[in-house]
Amino acid sequence: MRGETRAGALVLVGATLLGSLPAWGRAIYRFEPDPLTVVTWRALFAAGLLLLALATFRRDLLAVRPRDLPFFAAYGFLAVTLNFLAYFSAVKYTSIAVAVILLYTYPAFVTLLSAALLGERLTARKGGALLLTFAGAVLVIQVHQPGALRLNLRGILWGLAAGITAALYSIFGKKALGRYNPFTVVLYAFGLGGIFLALLRGPADLAALRYPGVAWLLLLGLAAIPTLGGYACYTAGLRHLEASRASILATWEVVAAAALGYLLFAEALDAGQMAGALLVAIGIASLQRT
Image 1: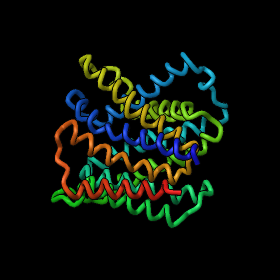
Image 2: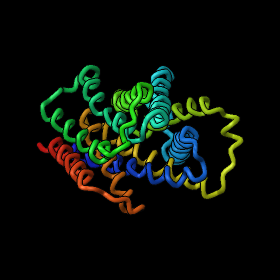
Image 3: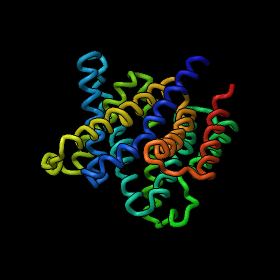
Image 4: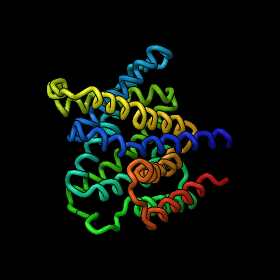
């Protein structure tokens, strides 16, 4: 149980780091307004930084079995490339609030898929925690605000695809962690996912882009802190937790994002958002309670 507690703490740290993504994005979009370009650099730089660190300190973690490369290619393509593309498209065709809330259907997909594919149990406690955290996320994202719900079929389908592919990160990750270190898993998922994104974006176009030095530093920060730090902590915690539990705990990300918006940009938090944060916290606490 002590190991599970540490793993849960790692997932929450990872969710907090991922919650800083909007703040980094706000700074970076001043220099690069195309989200697809930003997420491509994000994946490539995260994989590059991790590759450099492992090559320097833990070369043994770079090796994978050749027969596992198709698995990691599918992992990177589905859980990184398609996930980033689906979320980008959902934001394009509907509102940010709708895209985010459809993305946060992923704990439900993880819970169902982990029961079918990983043999995890469906319990009343998980169901209750899932409902509480999802309801809290809806309030924090302010879906109830006028103009937040801009619905169309294309946007909804892309949003659901973002939720499903986000769920696949945990499902594939849980399988990979049975054989590999979390850093190896993150390296190959983001490395191959980033390569697919670069091919989609156009390698020549990427190479032709010119940014000032501060923009490159912001892109490196985006890759190092919320992306590499967030996913590494989440994946390390996933190693010792059920995928369903880890994904529900990770809904803390939306609370962290709102809190950072308040602290860094003086964005107001209304009563509904604070009630939503409380629901997420209660859901997480109920899941952790022995």
